[in-house]
Image (cartoon, rainbow, N blue to C red; front, side):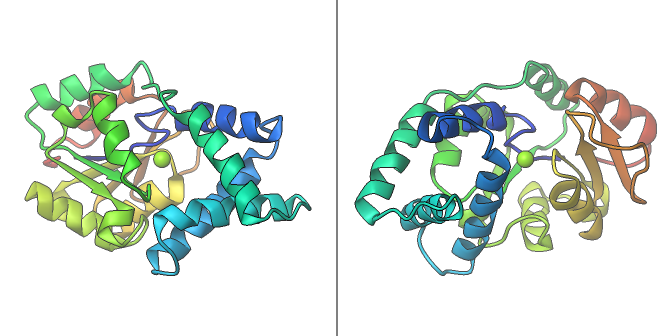
Length: 227
Ligand SMILES: [Mg+2]
């Protein structure tokens, strides 16, 4: 059983939006911020730059997209302020611990599979008390591949010692998580917390709206499949 971390277990968007608002004045530009962050994380995985420099380059690119050119010093100042606002602001969704307790009680080996890029992700997982639940933790920046690349799903299943076809992955991104897992040969489950779906789902993908629905899905719909 594999689980995404940000916006699946950790309410990443609320914290990240608040931190962005502390830097820019509002969170209206969060979708732009997220797109630019995803793009720079992907470029970091190709080796174009290190994590420590990626954040400043990303922040300069973000302000440039808003029409403001920053020198390195100013970009560093603003980025450090954003990180300060972010620090200690992480919270779990209320459905997370009951779900993880159920999965552990069911005896399922668990992997956290995150597209985050740096050491902070392991610190976040530890700080929030999540580390005890997971047999293995996969961070894209450490693996050198990000979802939907099947390499990270293969690595997770190898760590769990489970076959891809017998393993379920749950995450909040339809393409990167659910469809990526399906294409890797796993069972993909889309955690649609905000009700974005229109009722139609790609073949081989299931959807739930909260993690409270996961045990029933596993028991009823996936009966006969080891997870
Ligand atoms: Mg996520």
